[in-house]
Length: 253
Length: 253
Image (cartoon, rainbow over all chains, first blue to last red; front, side):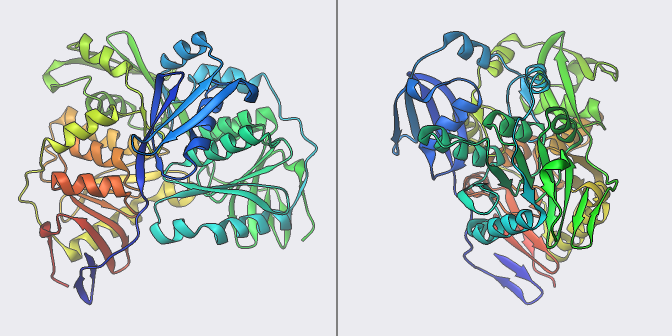
């Protein structure tokens, strides 16, 4: 029912279609993700990889999607210890995500650094985020999804949309992992806010430059600073903020 | 670093402060929530209540916040079975949330109905969401938080802001639970999108009318329809959409 000053009218509007997807690793039920029903194999693989439950591409024997039962079954080299540890994790993030435990995430992050010579021009940041907005058709229609994209400094390579911010990254990660696409020379773009988990996920992917249409939280900024990831936020027509590692951003405008 | 066509300028901007808060129930570590450092006792209690780990207000012996270790310790009547069951849950929602298992949520929802004679005028919907926007100071400054509010049909009673959509509801739920404020005659307002989990959380609170500045997902709409909750979305200046149970909304404009 659309309610305006001109009256109440029955109307049809597009909505984001959310489905439950259950992921099995070697017949063990791992998780049920609520997600948009596209790129489900990539999502399942990306989730397992991001959570550290699968390691090498060569270790994956099969990835099969069953549309009827809304499940993806993955056969891979197993690590029972990892799986047990994963099930005991108790952190729920700012967005509600259960990632690795908070201490694990901190230790993992602060022990390492982003190593990349990638540079990006101010004009390229603006152009990439314009491309992201242009491709965000579903978002504009339903207002119910977040959009993320993997890009070179010039062009978007892979665009993914989902009701969950984290799912957009997992869909990209899974596809790149399966296809062997390197990520350490790429830029990751997203419409979603950058919380600690979004930053952690990007770091695990090996991304040197993360650009958000929205803002970043204090914890994400502090971590990005420690690991030397370039974090760019709040990109609007003609302007943006570089929160950390500004040496990767070149002034040309 | 602010980057515009006029050049690069070092600048200071406000950001949402995200902290890790660990919740203990009777010395058992339950969860670490990433959240904004306000109303932490309410958040911890609201989370446990929403997850079904505590039941009656009278069963709570103490709720103590330790700022130094960023933890809240709650002493309450224990239900060991519930806690064991909770730790085995595997659903991660559209926003990344681990809620109850998907099947549990479905069964819980479809077995019950919202019972409420509450009615709201179209003009009241618009006025309440204007009040929410006016109070959303932190959001406007940092762009990093979601805001929710508990309201009568006329006025906001309780306004809560957090980096996590779910946390805003848990902060409201916890405070009302501790103070014995009834929720079945109230309206819940939020800037966040309505996924299945946001709907489930509101249902557990006993809310009959849920209003979002954003859109709702297909699964949330379908569930709201089944349980007869009034779901209103996409409120803009002068207009909004009623997704379900429209009989609670009265045309007066």
